[in-house]
Image (cartoon, rainbow, N blue to C red; front, side, top):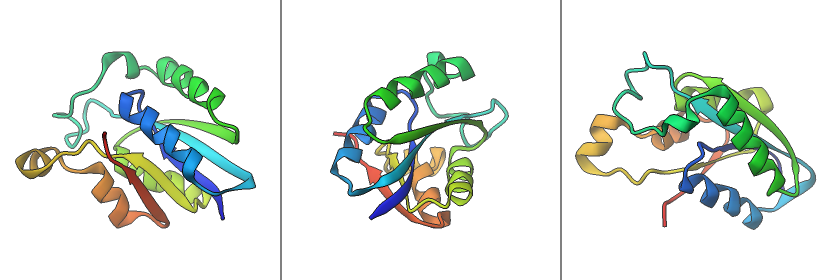
Length: 138
């Protein structure tokens, strides 16, 4: 049974799929969900070429979005809005919260796109201290 889950969300449609995936998991009654939104810094070379929605770049907008997600979940939830590289920050949060699982979306990049832009989900899977569930776009 899962006690602590770090859930990566960014306000996109894929985040809604990630949130709905939680309904299929066996989470302990005293379990905790940590909703995490990572805001990439402009200096992050890794994130520079990835498309981002301007409305989710501010701390206030990210916090508001996380509060909306909390209302959709019947679990105890915490929110984390952090600045930095998404993969590094998600792995860091998994260590801090001693997570049993990270749930995140995959942009579905393949081939050259994946080589150029990199894959956050691949990096998280390689460096995570726990299991990682990657939700694919529909």
